[in-house]
Length: 108
Image (cartoon, rainbow, N blue to C red; front, side, top):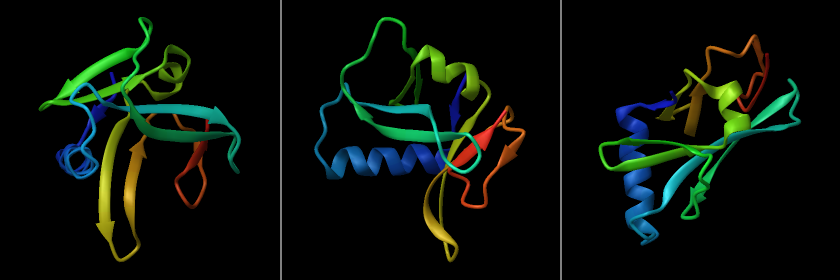
């Protein structure tokens, strides 16, 4: 399962409201090849879900992941940080054996 922190849930709700996205819109997380460590995280909003997608809901916020990405992201927590070092979503991925300094790519 992929989980979301309370801060991430709050930020996703804020964005959904601000952009007036349809209620069925989900936060889609995934991975793609590339980045300085081998794989890069992807994040976006999607209102088209596939039958094979992993779907979880947290306090009304929907989170989806395709099956291939789920192999790399199972057990991951999506968090949101807003501090002096930066503002954005962060991935706490227990499957990553190595991450880059920016936290946007990883290897297994």
